[in-house]
Amino acid sequence: MANEKEQAGENHSGDSVVSGANRNVIAAFLFVLGYGLLFSLGMANKAIGEMVNEIPFANIFLPVPEFTSPMYFLLPVVGFFLMFFLIDWINDYFEKKPGFSVLLPVLFLALSMAAFYIAIFWYIGNYAQLAGRVMTLDEATRLFFMRWRTSAFYLFVLSGLLGWVSRVALEKIKL
Image (cartoon, rainbow, N blue to C red):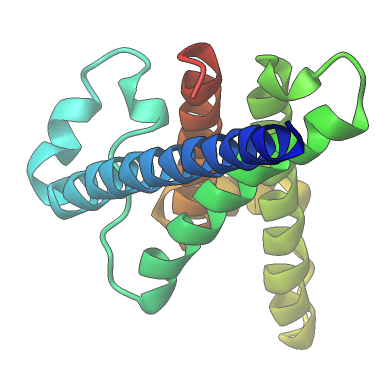
């Protein structure tokens, strides 16, 4: 009788490992799918750049920058899996499971834009000060909007949002 319980316990733990492995395989597949989407949009940037300006609200996220540096290849990996696994940590830490709330990607996007703005302000402001001039907030805002969509950090943010969508999709289909 004890052997049957032990075998049942082993089977149960084996099932959870298999389902966890399936979940990781599906997460890797979703990452490759999202990465391919970002990569193809980045490569098609020159072809669709002018068309996107005529589509309402599409020019917020498109076109993505061209992949011209190793950062453009590596930051999407970090962004996707950071957000994918951050949701589990947030849901374990809080009782109401706010990781699946729409508020999380909105907060992620807002904090990312704020961080990029601060980085632009301090980085360019430092060069301006070394050159003997003062950078205004208007100039920093103009530089922010010029550089936001052409930066590798933008791909980090987009892949983080894709990671959130993938994790929520896995939760909805119960894998």
